[in-house]
Length: 396
Ligand code: SAH
Image (cartoon, rainbow, N blue to C red):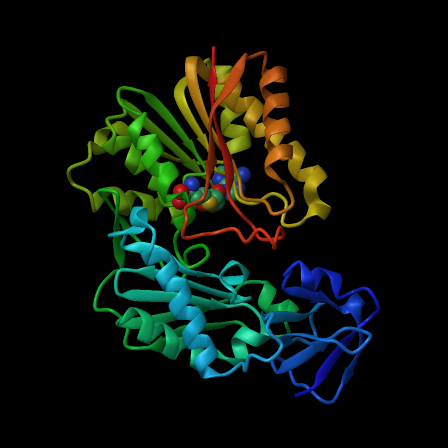
């Protein structure tokens, strides 16, 4: 096994169990390693520290598989890690019975670069690092063993693959394509999952509880769902008895899917739903001009700040939509506002939202802090992990 020797002092992050080693921390590689090969990580003074996957084209030169420098990285290792990730979810009662579930959340489950989402008896995986790519067979076998799934679709088409020197790969890698559509039942609402061309692995599982929360407070309300994607929030609002639900997204295909999702739920009052293909920033300004207002507004935009470097511009965009949102709320109205930007922490997000309320001339309070679902755990050692944060605000 080749040895990756760190520069002096650069072992410190490993002691804090941070799983990334940047190119700038590496003194040299002793021996030969191809992309994804396991290397033994050593401090400058020769201490053996961990084993990780080597990635020569990425700035993240190595991702740690094990902080036990003696642990062998082989098929059995991935079986253990995958089984552990699945068992963690089984141990959480609130996840019981969910048909749509994230089974593996990459670094936070000790499997850097590996995402696995379950939709009924189908799994959709993303292999986003050279190490994950190298161990694809072992990962697939471990997933099949841990879940008994019928089929696995690979959606390794994210941009990060390029940074790792990997081509995009999509297609069935275990079992056969299903006869019909794939859908899940999420808290009483049926939702189709476009695993082949939808966002991520086809669906935003991390918003499950927040969609349910909206349903619980929507009765009799006029709801505006911004960035609605395939209508998850909208359908829960209808299920919760909303008087009207206006949903906006700039993507035609997402709205088509949203309409199809509504049709999958014949019990819901379709006549109360309106879908609009528009830019949210523009639409909210037009509503203001038209004098429209709403009881509940959801703002769940795409990530404006993929990293801290984009935080400034992203902060302006968050400020803008939140300000517009606050302006459109009826007295006593509720704003559910989110950020999934890795570069914007909860504190900063809260400051932005507070500034937006102030500039909108509204008195508002946070009635609840909102987070992603527990199947998207956030490793405390890994602050770079993208995680969902949100606030439920109420205005006077
Ligand atoms: N709330 C959704 C997920 C939202 S994903 C759910 O629970 O499933 C973000 C969505 O924002 C995407 O569907 C994308 O098409 C849309 N989007 C991005 N920029 C937009 C803009 N400027 N105006 C309207 N929609 C936009």
